[in-house]
Length: 114
Length: 113
Image 1: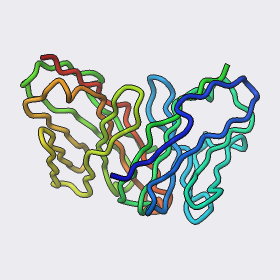
Image 2 (image 1 turned 90 degrees about the vertical axis):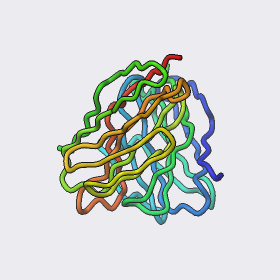
Image 3 (image 1 turned 180 degrees about the vertical axis):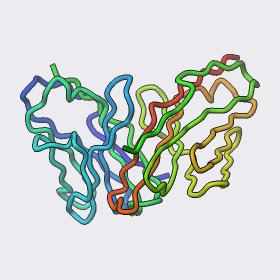
């Protein structure tokens, strides 16, 4: 059964450093998403991406964040200058369509900013 | 502001003891409601999608129902392996072209043998 994969599973970084989180969505899906979950809190939407551009983004997704689909299989989230409050579990998801289509989630990358 | 609230926050059951989890929502134009299961340290695993009031979906010991204001996840004769956090999420808004999901805080279910 196809699934979303994410690398790395864990990432530790120093405040101010850049990190890139990687995702391989399900192969025939066209819509891609990033969510995050701070420990003990709700899963929060960050951004959705379709046809090589951002479809929607949340207030959390400021200028420090960017997304890219560098090739036909990968989808990345870059945080330019990490802050302590960026520590969270980051989930990638993909779907065949934006609305009413099921989003399938990856296992997540746990980011710890020191 | 669109909101999703789940109750209870935590639920402890004995094996075989049936119960229900609640997800209430206040959104501008519900387009779909999704139930996910999340195990500790893992990503949400899809369970059900409900689109309109009155709709029901079943899978093994789980049954999801939807009204105009809330959804229930009924668990019949649960087993220890059903222990997990159950997440409810909605898609809302007539002009939601981005597919954003709004999540509740989840119900942590523990089933003891």
